[in-house]
Image (cartoon, rainbow, N blue to C red; front, side, top):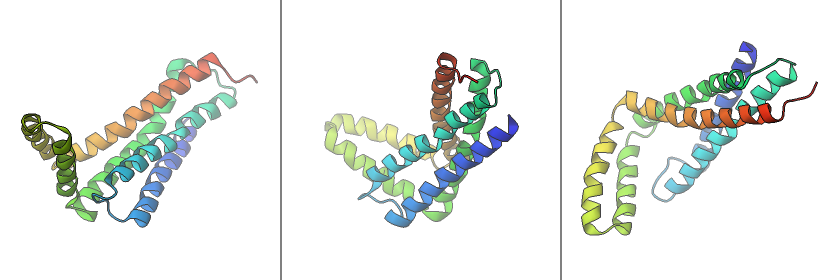
Length: 173
């Protein structure tokens, strides 16, 4: 089981980082002209790499191992830890050294979007809350934690769905 976790976890993390690298090479550092595309690519790469949660559970099932829902869920969650850590570390490195002005640029972009869609009163209230939220991102621990949690929660959802799938449709030997 450990071998399946490590193999699929490393593949998932490699795919996630590889997609980020390719996106960086194609688009360069994100800016107001491509923030939305970058976000779509980011979430799509998270879901794509976490296909290895399903494949890892499937591999375990193909070995003829009897696996309960909880065992499959644990296997999927363990695989999800690898890309979660990788993305957390990547985010810290990106925000601190690759593009240290990213948070200011992204914050200004989001404020402009909010200003266009809210009333002036709503915007002022939202702007204060947004400034508080953005201040959290200045912490390396929060950067890592939020990005780790983002990937891990998506991985947990995929683990639950995969575990349910294999409970409802077990692989016949």
